[in-house]
Image (cartoon, rainbow, N blue to C red; front, side, top):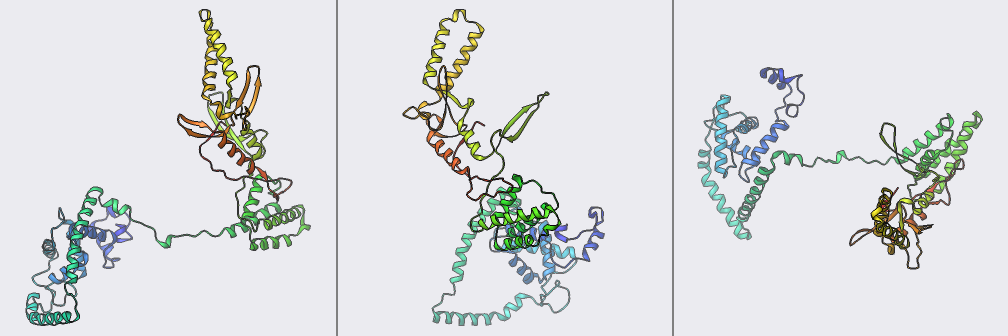
Amino acid sequence: MQKEFGATPEKPEDVPLDELGGAFQSTFNGQLGKQSSSLIARLVSSKMPGGFNITAVRKYLADRWGLGPGRQDGVMLLAITMEPAARLGGEPDAKAFLDTVANKYAATAGISLSAPAAGGAGGAGGAGGMMMDPAAIDALTKDQKALFKQQLELLARYLKMDLRKGDKAFIGSEETNKVLQAQLDLWIVEHGDSYASGIEPTFTPLKARVYDSSWNWARQDALSMFYDIIFGRLKLVDREIVSQCIGIMNRSSPILLEFMQYHIDNCPTERGETYELAKQLGELLIENCKKALNTAPAYKDVAYPTGPQTTIDAKGNLTYAEVPRPSVRKLKHYVKEMAAGGKMSEYGNRTKVQSNLTKIYKIIRQQQRMSKSSQLEIKTLYTDVIRSLAMNEGQIMQENGKAKRSTKMRGSEGATECIPFLHLRRKEEHGWEYSKKLTGLYLECLENAAVVFDHPLSLDGLGLTRRRRVSLSRIRMFS
């Protein structure tokens, strides 16, 4: 009801129809609402023959029955309740259907449709005025139309124009419309009307929004930091503050520098230590913004590298958290830790595999008096052998027997190689296999990214590290 009439009374479902109609009548503008217009358009598009659109329907009601726009709306609303079961075959069927609806509307409204109004401006027949039959008018003008037609054909032959060109094109378009209409009917039967209305585009240029106020936010961030220092809310320059400074540097502009310089020049340092500190740090930030003025904005991560930590409390509840890694302060330390590998990524070389196989052979020979400890040892050694054989040593060891990106651990049973925690694998015939070459390139990229800037932002002795985004395929992380 709101879509059709706009504002509605409170609890319209409890109001009698007579009172509800009177309430809507005071605000009715004489035009159909969105809901009724949509239903009429659906009726015409789905039940009327091709080419017989809403304009043709209204023209027929005006010419045949002399109905004005308001009466036409009434007829169409009544037609919604008398919708045919299938699409009408042709224009004569459509006109017959409209005649039936118009006569029923006239009976309901208490008007006479015996003949159309001569003026045709509004109302229905019987509303007063001189009444004439359109057939009588056509009989009077028949000879004139024949003469005009002869003259028109004569001029067309002289100008070498085809007066039937439009009719021929219309016949071709009618055939095309029938094919398209059949496809549309099939689509509507399959998906229904709600699907079509649901996928209609709703974008309008008036809804477009352009967010180009980063220059203004940079001013606000700089001014907020300035007053945080003055009022003592910012006393320690940590990595979060450095990250805010980097954000201001990325948005530096001559106007921003002028804005910051004005506040620093007019900072009354005689009022206390916080004002003096604000001026010192502000001048340092201005110098860094000047250096970043001619460089493109870049993302720089200055947070501590973190790692996964899972804890189990006394009740057995699991708790997961990302905590700072011990002894890992910068990205370059993280890269070294990932490249070193550890016990989890360890694999045994052929010397160790042969030693384990020898032990298994000896234990099997003594299987008649095998104890539980021996059974457990067999299971452990067997697991170690299977895991070691799954590792392709030729992928990890170089031809000269040295590993470029691996750590050797020597013990009494031979050397042990460790695959880096952070490594890459390549799709092989039997699955994903560790790739020494790709891992070397990837770790080299990380090492190059984990370098200190030539001109770092140093507030209170805190340096920054640069972290570039590395995009490589299939990364397997052990930690």
